[in-house]
Length: 360
Image (cartoon, rainbow, N blue to C red; front, side, top):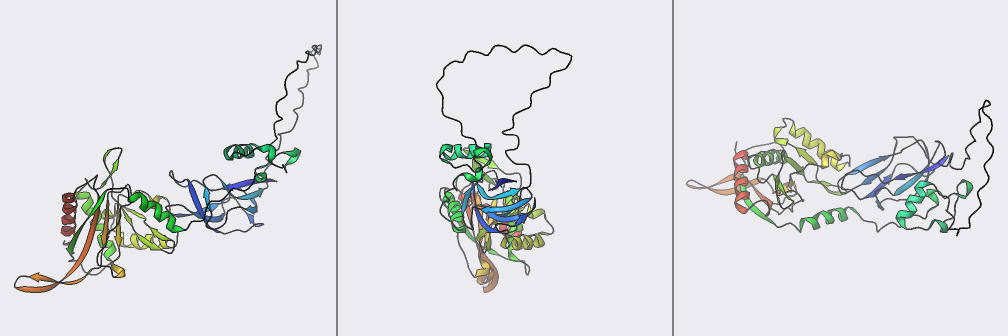
């Protein structure tokens, strides 16, 4: 039997740490390779972690809400695979001498030369030696439990887990980055001619269509210049039990089944069942608080996106009409723009296109 670490996986190119959400297995439970043992969350999405081999979950070192660096152990499995040390201390057998050849006379032994002895090398498996070097641990201070007094990975002291952080810490990190972006917001009352249906679906499609008409805002600021995107990805802000998530709807203006797609992605966002692919590729964000009775608000940008549309409540409002006053269905929206990418006039033109699309 060998004890193998189950480590915090790297689930995206930018991931450096993850937060353990819950364990599906307990110490002493048998597990099989590919079986889900726990769930972790990144700054993007909750993901399931699978066992890497058949065996027994012998030790859990990370608890729910613990923050663990990528590649560091969260638990240890005792597996039925060959032992890590098999063959490490075996002395190779001498090669047989062919019978037809005479056995050569042994050469005279060399005269020993006095040298200064260096420190003895501590026996340790490669994984333990590598981890000790990374963490600055002197292997000579570790008590070995492996065969032939060899230090195993599990002999190293447990990692000092950083402070426990909830979902708000992730949102705080994203919004702190947003605060570094020079941004402004333009408001406009839009007249709604469409009736019935889901207003979120209506605005997702309309925003994607408007951005396709104005590619100068379907862009980001990168390497000192504006970089335009070849697709439109609307990140839809969803209120979930673990905080705000924004799954991305790619090219929603080209999707005839958009209503069902929006319902599905919202349901899975709230259940924590999104994939990493669904959290990537956003070129803009849409946040709709109309269902909470909010008339208007300012949505912050999610870098590197250059725009964000805040949608208020769709309601009947008194408006001037020829010969007097009347009632019309209106909605106040706020378009936030990265000032490095666009100006106020660019935002105004996009909102004009949005009004035209909603009037069709």
